Length: 300
Length: 289
Image 1 (tube, chains in turn yellow, cyan):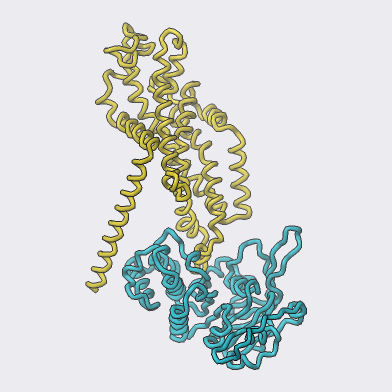
Image 2 (cartoon, rainbow over the protein chains, first blue to last red):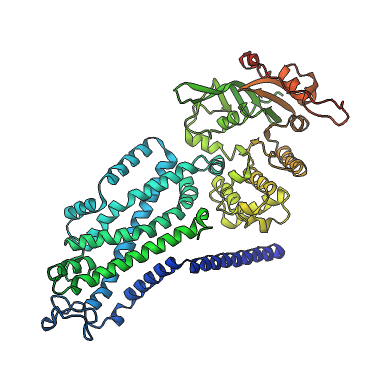
């Protein structure tokens, strides 16, 4: 018994070492991927900004000071001040928290919903598949931003309604993807082997189909984040997302619109922030796809 | 044999839809029964061997059209049984070893975990550790020398023979009454093949279970099984006890036997197998039992 236990812990140790080695190899390949590293640094910077916003901010993001309104970028206001004299730099820092909350919540809700619906309809087929896929078709037929707009208009403006609305528009592509993967898997012999062992369909979906879909869903999630940020800021811009005085980037651009010719920094600074973060997520997503897909590995 | 057979199949037909809407009949009226014995099914590729047994297990793709006068496992009529009833039979009462371990083991899960999974589906109340120990015991029973290490490997890390043995362990873990082995040895070399077959034989005799072995290899089947069914183009053309192979009546079986080289035979080229259209159309042979 001790011998077998030793063997077991030894094989576990070997396995852990192999895992670590695998991870190191992945990290090495990732380091060689220049754009991927740029993307990763941008995202890390965003995370740091969100985490340490109170420490990094030079002013209170909500406190108006009317004598400083629309000050140009300088020593006192690094990125200028907006129409109520609030520091744009500090507001962008706090806004990064809102952006992260929206993106992560949407992805955390939409991806599992899409995954379960897609895997179930791909595996079971029949009527279930028809119903789910037609619903998906309906959602895919309407432009995302328009659909989100309609939902927010119905639910009322606000940051959590915006999250809900974006989630409702974000799940169908995941469902489509998971279904395609499930269709290829459901008659695979190893799925049949589990079926032959007497497993029920829900068991097969949960333990065999969904884990196999995960890797493509993760890549898709990273690539989707930029789009979600754009929709969220778009909703903020037209006043249906986060409500003032919340420092949401889209809402900040919207207030700066009035001064764009004379005080360009009010609208431009949050715009640059949105641009950088979207670029970061896209570069990171591209690098992930290149590195996680074995077919593209030679190129990476 | 006086005992009622475990499996009874009468006039089984399986067809697939063609592009133009007509049906392609892949299995055209197969009748056989199997008891607690070793039954071999031989035939060339596409003769319907695998399809017939997969229909029995109920794992054909949905677009296959299956009809039969009778498809019975012990007292259960598989034609009318609900999916849940059939699911209860699968694994615990009827097991099937699939052809190729490369495709029939989940590539992203440890092989040991897959055996544990099969055990826990059959007995959800079994503890994690108990299931693990049982899986290791099963691996040991199929002559894997270091089961603890193999348990933690992924399918691509084990050899074909080991993968096949893992499959056998997975299906034998539940001690089914009848085990269908669909070309379990076609991917293996001769020594491993004999090993794998002897493992299966050992388990089947110990548990007094039935075995249906599907193979291309007439010689292997005739030496291993008690009875042999010969299939050709979706029909059973002949049924023989393996000792009576030389008494084969049907020209197709005789042709197959004539094609086997023997070590002290004449040095002339082996005859080429002739196929005749009439065999497929002729009256299906009925399993005498």
